[in-house]
Amino acid sequence: MKKSIPILILAMLVLIPAVQAAGQHPKYNLDWPRAGEVLSYQSCGCADSCWTAELKQGKQLKARLRCDCEKLYFTKEGGQEQKVADSCDEFNVESKMGLIPQRMRELKEK
Image 1 (cartoon, rainbow, N blue to C red):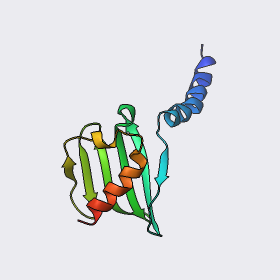
Image 2 (spheres, rainbow, N blue to C red):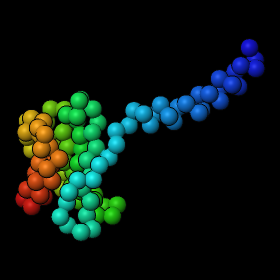
Image 3 (tube, rainbow, N blue to C red):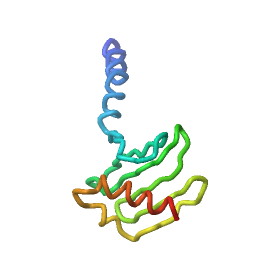
């Protein structure tokens, strides 16, 4: 029994990072027209109804658009997060990855 405890601990140390990585959602870069800025998208669950899109220049966050499975929120650089829609249904379509940059541009320019 005493010999199996170190093996069990070693197995847990090896497996935990793999299990954690399996639960993470990959981040994708979306089309964005401005050089030096990157728009990324990452799902967080709810069958892809929970997601975050972040616009960054280097490491600096310029804007964030996110859905919490129900409502749509937007944050501009240095500002407070604001609810911009009571529903994220407009994004639950095949053209979602094209709609996100469009909506980000609209909100960022306000």
